[in-house]
Length: 336
Image (cartoon, rainbow, N blue to C red; front, top):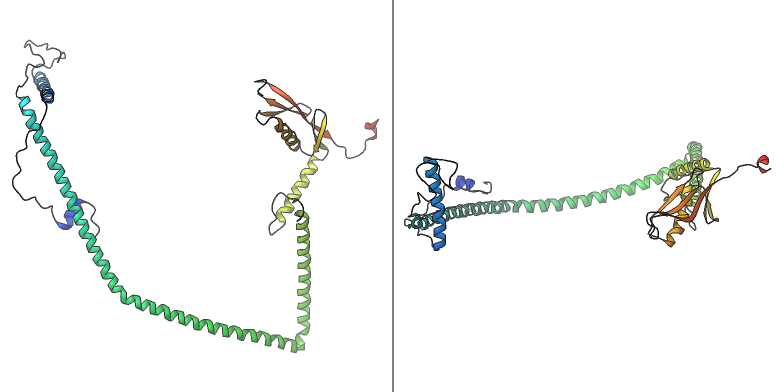
């Protein structure tokens, strides 16, 4: 089967050269219809081209076309052809005829290519139809083979079920034989005891895991870890270890959030105190930017930046976060 025809070159190679048109000789092109103004403009353009060509051949001075520096007294229009106004209509008629001829040739080539493509399509369709006719008997054979395989598979499944039943019966018989043979009773007792110990240990571990899950994520309360518990508790244990280390590092310092000397809460980290103060301040003004000014002692004042009532300045909000040292034991000397 030949490849699809997609261009004129392939069509000519497969089907031969383009057919030559048959018919009477073409007529002489008729002059085009122009207005007097159009004729004058076209003739003037032609005469300018003629004058420029002749001047360049005779003189070629730099003053042209305004004037001519030679002694001949030449000027633009000196070599005008009066018959250009008559010839321009006939010349344009021939030009239009030539353009139309090229377009006809192009369309004929496109039509020829499309006909070649249609012929190739018909050949491919006939080849496909022939292949289908050849495959039709094989299709029946394939259907019959599939039916045979399905039937054979059904027989195998029946045989497997029968063998499975026999295996179950043999397993039951083996258990009876094991019980009947006294020489194996000690070994069996030892294995059973070992299995029981393993089961007890596994049950204890499962109970511990359930207890830990209940402590970390109680059903009637909030989770103690900031994520869902998975199949293992290792991530939760790692998080708790890191949290203990964090609390031990922060031991001895708390941060007091207050507003105009009224205590709002104590926190083990500065950010939590910041969040408390900012949440209260946003209730009054949710637009103006906020900032924290921290002095050398670590005391932070919450201020508003570029508030509408005082552009370009900072306005105190009264919210303050103060770090406080928490003693781990009583100092008698410090109390005096």
